[in-house]
Length: 242
Image (cartoon, rainbow, N blue to C red; front, top):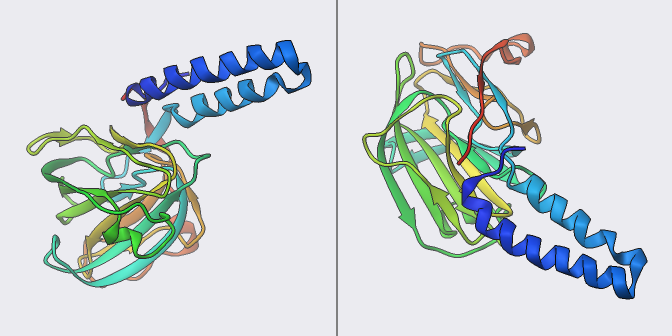
């Protein structure tokens, strides 16, 4: 199992703590000894980097994170995009993988870290009030840009990791960061430029393989049918460490 490099410190600390607790319980209360080991396995699962098949669709934006869709909203004016935007939000529970992936092939325009509060990531106010990092991307053709990925800390999450720098090129599904423990990741695209949501509220998505938006090339294009919403056969297998 591949683990996220940026979680190794937490893994080491919790390994020592939980394995030590298990040994102590085995001596004094043997029936409880497995509990810390179960928690330790949960920690490993949280920081794992699963292999993902990336759809070979140049007109698609894939999910930047694992989790559940809890927001599909039209924003009348986004200052970073300079106009109306479509926003899809993904809530990451403590049971989800927390690595982040690039939604498409793109060039990084800007990365901005914004200190803030630590509200529950499901709170609508968390989008702008919580500590967050904004990644502005210029997508490769045929996609229209710019697009925004926002990493948002939650009630428990206290650290956002972003390994991107301005001018850097990324590929669809490429690992670029991590949010530790419960959090939220958002993807924003220009409205009225041909992007159509490919998911519904409460859908579960997998970072790098689930498609969030499809680019229809023509602004105002009809929303795709249910069959069109299904992701195409994946052709590229992506994995790696962060």
